[in-house]
Length: 335
Image 1 (cartoon, rainbow, N blue to C red):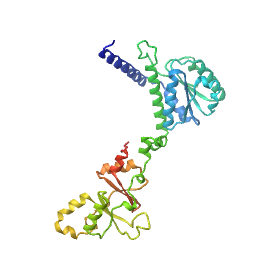
Image 2: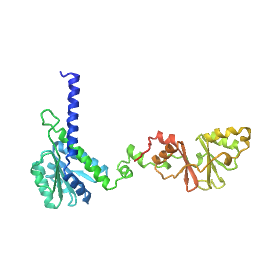
Image 3: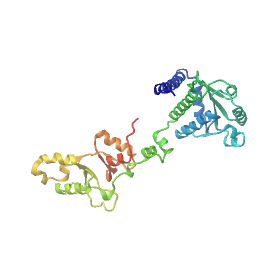
Image 4: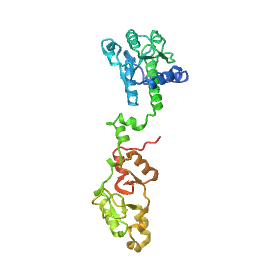
């Protein structure tokens, strides 16, 4: 039985060989790789990936990657294609065959049929074979040998084809101007979707939960309101007269935070004679209800604050708190 040291060395050896294969491909990438990106950008239909065996598994993986990054894609099994599934392919689709050796009887027949239909065809391979001369565009990746000791099992070659496919997907999405929100729309049920699509409105405290005082409210009223609502601040508004009739107040004047109250305590006994507008922070940071939640969190992190008043123009409609966003798994997204 192999020792732990031997096993670890074997693992490292395979990783190093695959890393070297990727590095060599990056340094010797053929110009046809650029042409493939350009061809995909011109496609009006979908990108159809196809391959047998391990290449088929790679094709399925690339379909998932391309589709999630804004390029509609499907997988077509070569054998099934010859028994009816060719009907899935429309004339405006781009067909991309995957084959390490650049050969394959089924793929040959599929490519012949699709070219007769008028489809553009391409090939991603690690060796030039018969398929290379049948397609409109052939990308032969620089490749030496497998990481497998016998140089037989697809290891370095499959890693190389997946990595190149990922590179093409990223280059295409970048050229299309694919953005974070576009990505989120393809992942609405997952953590990323929640992160990128959720708005402040989903997390804000609404009308009946707001700690509101008027500008002439006494210091005692401010303390009572802050204690009752427990949101770490009090909102000072111009008037509460119409609050029951609309979804907000007449006008936001400022806020009184726990920090403002501590600083006001330096005034001594005269503090109890102060009105809300005399101890409040003017022009507080605000956010609209429709702003993405992660953007609101980034504002709070940038200015080292824990809450934002939610406004519609200058009308108060809510409060969003840092702790609620973090608890929901929202994080800032930069770049």
